[in-house]
Amino acid sequence: MNRKPLTLYFALVCAFAMLLSCKKDKSPGPNPMPNGEVRLTGIEMKSGGNSYRYTLQYDNLGRIATVRHASNDEPGSILFNVTYEANDVILTRPMYDDPSVQILDTIRFNLDLDGNVRSRLQYRYVKSIAPNGDESRTYIHDTTVCEYNGEGLLTNLMHNLHDSTWTFANGGTESKKILRKMELADYVIEGSKLSFVNRRGDVSETMFVAADTSIVNTIEEAVIEFDYAKAYQNKIDFSNAAVLNELHAFTDLPLNKKFAYLPNTVHTTKTRKNMDGVIFSTTSVTAQNDFSFNADGYVVSKGDPGNPGTTVLYSYSK
Image 1 (cartoon, rainbow, N blue to C red):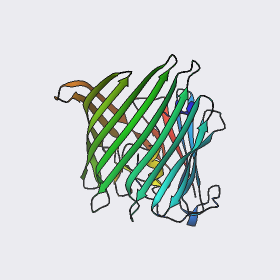
Image 2 (cartoon, rainbow, N blue to C red):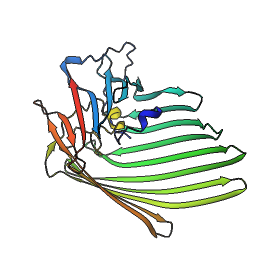
Image 3 (cartoon, rainbow, N blue to C red):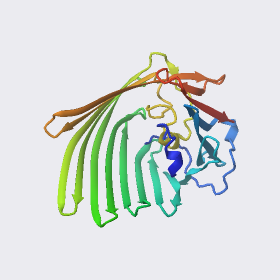
């Protein structure tokens, strides 16, 4: 995610899928739509006078081939190129390389026969050099494995993160931080609705500074509750759900056409504890969604009553 646009993501930017084709197409057109099917082609978030946009380009099979991003009046650039190998979908970020920053990033989804994501694997490398000569290198290995019920709805998720950072301060001091996180999540399904998600993660942070070593172990818990009082119909473009879900394009609800509704409220409570169970921080956030739909029933906008200056717009093509 190239540097300057990162600051304007506004939380639009994990991973569940309905990608139907496995064949590579080496000649993507600009936006061809097979058999008149509807495809999501653009997402624009407006907030505080700023605008951030995703533009989605498709191959001749109706699969996302390129995700572009742009801020305000900038011409924009490629965020991801998307390729397909058998049951895998690969998102590759064009290499960012200048004298101060180098970024490499690849995400690989493996899909089951129904198009659901069985696993998500991310490798990310960031090297930065400050004007004063300070240097840091970060390596991220991020793995997620998913399980589904007989209806094809996500029920369990295992997330394993390994994040290591090496830092060299101008003057000769080296330090290294290693973060490991193992998280399990249960998705509670009631009928055709996701009611809530329970997450629990064991986190270990190890710091090496010169000859000193420190280790901090914590427990992170989260409960995410979904409310559907407004009965918003769950009608969007699900054909490229793995890629769209990576962009957090609509809500925290995993994209799946078998859900009956989109949530009008998502309430998240996060708690951090030490290994003895003593709580040292709790946060609670409620996101409200006001959706509007076009004549074909597809979502065309999303607002948040708690943040009236922010709007997300969706555009489609046939």
